[in-house]
Image (cartoon, rainbow, N blue to C red):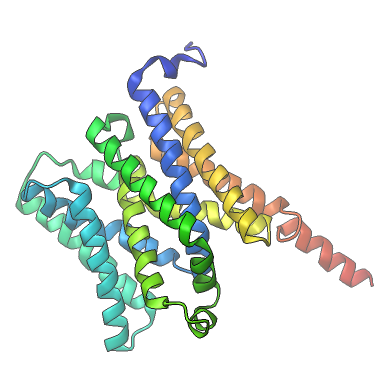
Length: 283
């Protein structure tokens, strides 16, 4: 039976654990804004829309992160344009763009066979991450955290009440584009860890968990970031012992913590709501 310290004896596991923790924390920090803005479906769409960008980047000999980021931005702008011009509901627009871009990526990968593994793109493969990819993740994560730290107050006001932010003279169009760019960049970084299918979980679940536990946004940021980072670290660590998917372990762990918060949260949990109903009935 392997020792509890065995995973740390392997360089690939140590890299996977540290990068998973980093990506988990960055995604969780951003997830607070995504949750507040109600952009959960947007995160899902962008995480899948980067697939054709990965294919085109490989064909042109570019780093796949560059192609994925550009594809995410174009997809987000396409959603905004289509919503304004068509009058369709946002969920319908997101569904159309999400499925069409993902299908385009699959088509390109089938027409131009490459060394890219479709399974790796969709499900991730953090255990085989290369040093150049690690550097890309570090750069993306560092820039994302820096921008969020500098602009979090403006982004908070924009996500909470866009009309009020506009009335105060804040450039909401710039913040809209900035949040889309951060979402695309973070999705690209997380693509290495959990793949396109599970990115949305890392971009939504920690924020939703923290939302249940506090009414103060500053505390929400701390709780979500710690939850995301710990789940990334522990999920990657646990995957070694159960010989399971690293991304799957991370997301399942995040989901379990969310369910615990949903039941036991002191103010917004199911048990708290039940107690309030009982008190109201008694009175």
